[in-house]
Image (tube, rainbow, N blue to C red; front, side, top):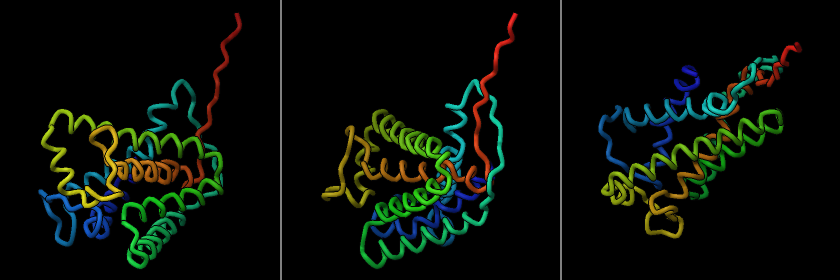
Amino acid sequence: MIIMSLITASFGPVSELWYFADYWKPEIALPLPVIGGVEDLMFGFSIGGIAAFGYESLFVRGVCKCEEKKLKREWFLFVFFVVVGILMIILNNLLGMNSIFASSISMIVVAAVMLYMRPDLITNAVGSAFLVAGTMFVIYFLGQEFFPSSHAWMLRIWKLSGTSQGLIVFKHIPWTEMLWGLSWGLVWGPMYEFLVGARTMELRLLKKRN
């Protein structure tokens, strides 16, 4: 879990190269030398751990979790970076698509390839997608319910606010954040199992007969 979270910690600042340009521009409390801040590192670290292991930790209970080795594909992590980077350049920089949609589409494309190769990970991927989006939903909703002034702050930093793409759901939540959360959970949720060639098996324990 720590390794997967450390990998994604760097995603936060790097992704702001695109997001700051056309999606949002929040104030940075602890800025990093090039772009983004320590907040981005913390977000990347936490959202990586939630996506990679949250579903299994919460919903795979009362079973014996065993790893059955399948084909390892550690090289696919490099493919993930390259494909997402290329699609971001094409969709965002060349075609002008907003970065939040470009990144979501990029992650969905990579997830589709993974699940085509490992259909046994579909449940993990879908469960992780809803878990990440659900976690973000709760944070956005409760945060703005308990701190009403944060809603005005969100609208101020969110560049899609007031546009046709700036739809707010349940009073407080930008629908684009839910889209991103679903996409991220879909691709990163099964990533560990896909890379190391493992799968979670449910072994039902038989009761001893008297």
